[in-house]
Length: 208
Image (cartoon, rainbow, N blue to C red; front, top):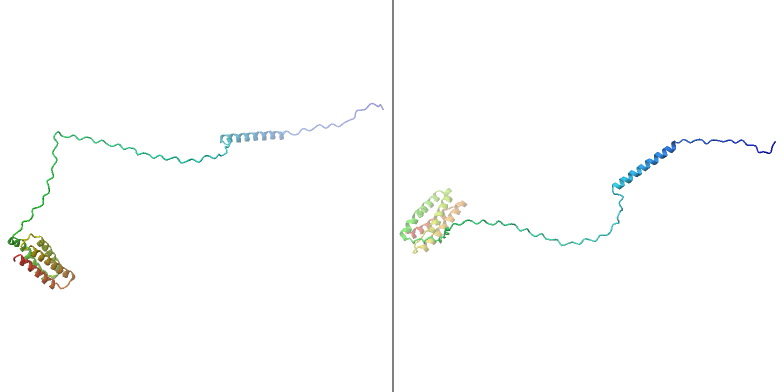
């Protein structure tokens, strides 16, 4: 046997090729991630969220400025149109002074008697009717009271003016008492007699 080294036999194992499917999925995942990041960045940029946030600074407190008062707007006034006047203006009407009615002439006794006799005669008949018809006595006395007011306003001669005024006042008071008796349903005989007596005094003063 020679001293020369003899070649030794070695087993050589070829490396098996791994499937490439894993690498493909990795590439796809990276691409999807890139797209997602790009979309988020674009949306954030469009919404303005990428602008730097400024730190809030204390702003000075606004002081109240004097309020200006609105001045009223002058309202335009219409200029009156001049009215054409005639060359000869009409004179203004003059107011006539009010004249009081002339005083009533004082009648004589005969004229006075003629004026008051109709009412005095009506009073005599009215009292007789009231006594005979007490159910309508109040209405009759109302009419007699109106006549008494007219007798008080009649122009009277000065010679009998005082006596006439006192007699008319007494007659009116008795008629009022008689009316109250009829309203109350009381016996009217006493007020009737007093009214007749007052009426007789009037007739006597008038010369009847």
